[in-house]
Image (tube, rainbow, N blue to C red):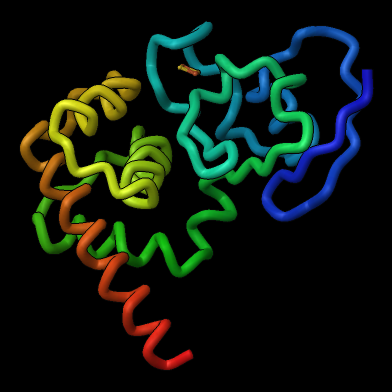
Length: 162
Ligand code: FES
């Protein structure tokens, strides 16, 4: 089966002959060692990517499901302006993910901030994908709320000066 998709801004046609997970496709096509299946599936939460803006564990997404979709890995996300909002939110709250889960957690924060999710229960549910215990749940909630505030301010400034 052949599918078209976009990964980190590159339009690709992938030949799929099995139900490979997206994490392996990323490794094979983007050379991204960070997306190796770390745990055998849904145990560590260290493989999150954005699929059409929504954070998903790449080891749990069958590759055929990304047909026509836009996949963004942390490697390209870290070079966007949006990551600055999250870095500022980390700084403002005074809490940061550890190096092990930084990429994955940051992608989940981005998904929540982009969708404007401010409900604590929903924030913690999404972030529970990451099993690393390095962050305080109250800090995670504050980071999302701060990130939403910073993103809104930046968007207002952008429309004012457009
Ligand atoms: S590799 Fe562990 S949850 Fe995806």
